[in-house]
Amino acid sequence: MIGRFLGRSDSLTKSAVLLLMVAAILLMTLRPVFSQPNIEAPVLTRVVTLDGKITNADEWSDTRETYMTLVQDYTSGLLPIERRYTVIWAKHDGTWLYLLVKVARLSADDPNDNCGIIYHRSLGPTGSKGKLSDYKFHDLSGVNMRDAPIDQYGFDGSRWYNDVADGGTNDVEGFATQDNVSQWFEFRKKLDSGDKHDWTLSPGMTYGLDEGIMRIFSNDMKNKRSYTAPVRLSLLSTSLTITKITSVEQPLTITMTTLIERTPVTTGTTFGFLDLSTLQQVGGVAATGAGIAGYHFKTRKRRFVTNYLKKIESTSENESLGSEERKVQLNKMRDEIVRLLEDGKIDESHFTALDGRLTERLRNLD
Image (cartoon, rainbow, N blue to C red; front, side, top):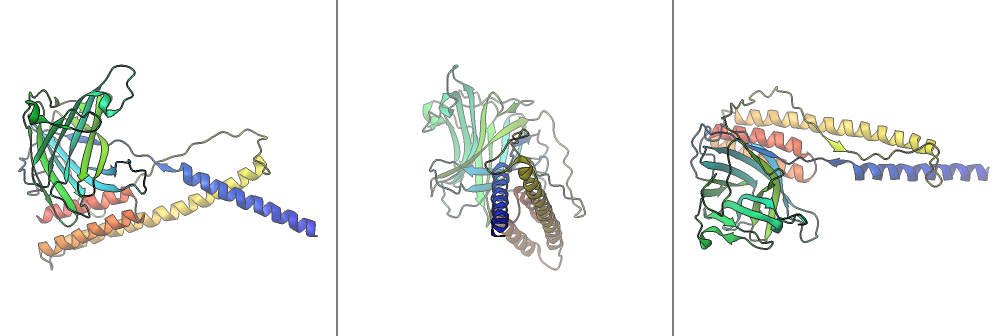
């Protein structure tokens, strides 16, 4: 009797240990796949007023928003790595590239906080390690919160050099503002200035692929932190026709992509005291349980996002409130969804959908 009890207890212990192992493997191998964002810059059909904000509803309506996350440069070795949620608009007129970058506001303001775009091109001779300093050409363009343009070149691995200090010219113009939620950087850079230190870009081309590295950056000067992410920039040869979604009944489609590494297991393989049949049985139970839990979790998130979209619509269309009060309430919702994302209550796909709708409704109230 005692022997049978101990045997059964031992079997249960083995199954419990295996279940924990399978759960741990699932947690370690399920990782989100993030692609390098492609920023489309069509030929503009609306004039841009460089004032560090969306001046009116039409100003940036001739291009699409690109949503992305800037990640803190991982140099200190300390966790967690901070992220800043960002929206970018881009277009050109054949002479200038226009960029509007909205970045989540920093907790501590500094007039030297800045934002912009970097381009490293032409990797050195064969044998170079691919470090940024190995590239032959470097260009940095942006603007800071004092509305001072930034035009630099020649990154040597530790510092940049001022373009105008070495016979070059300043070919960047821009302004910056901030509200309760975001910092806004609106600037333009010549596609081909003729300055030997500047980039040379042409409509019909995409940059940031095999020929070099292009990055969007934002610098927190008070805390000496840099946030950055790689991008591709596609300079279109034509304008775009943008169709805005206005119906709250539009179905919300969210695609979650995961990468799972699978190692084939041959018949007869054993894992210590566990045979393959036991592993398959417990693994099947674990996978089924994880699938059911994941389904209910994602369904609950989708339901929350759908209800939140309706809340945004009802607030923006509430004529009993003035437009300024509606904007205040919508900006409070933006604060809330940032906190929900940071707490893991919603994922980045849901955040993107909600923030996009809030941006559109706030623009309509201007």
